[in-house]
Length: 75
Image 1: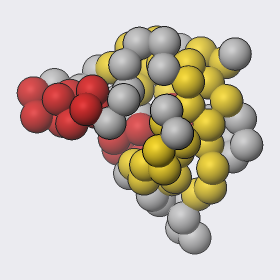
Image 2: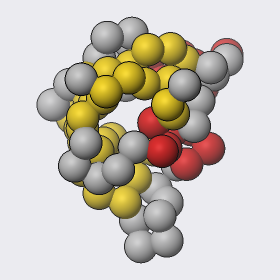
Image 3: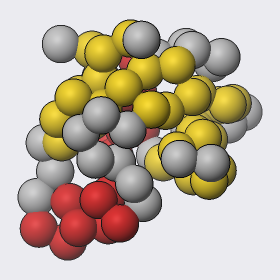
């Protein structure tokens, strides 16, 4: 399964599942990372972390460890 942190800049994907738990899961859901949400990878930081994503029209930065908990599929 493809993880969000493996997606290249400029690609678009759809959220399939979240592996996060408790407070982190609640935060991700509040940011719009729900099943079926479309995400565009905007840019990666100088060292590859964090990465900026367009999620439902909002620019959100996630660290690699957070993005690795989001399973996605291309669309």
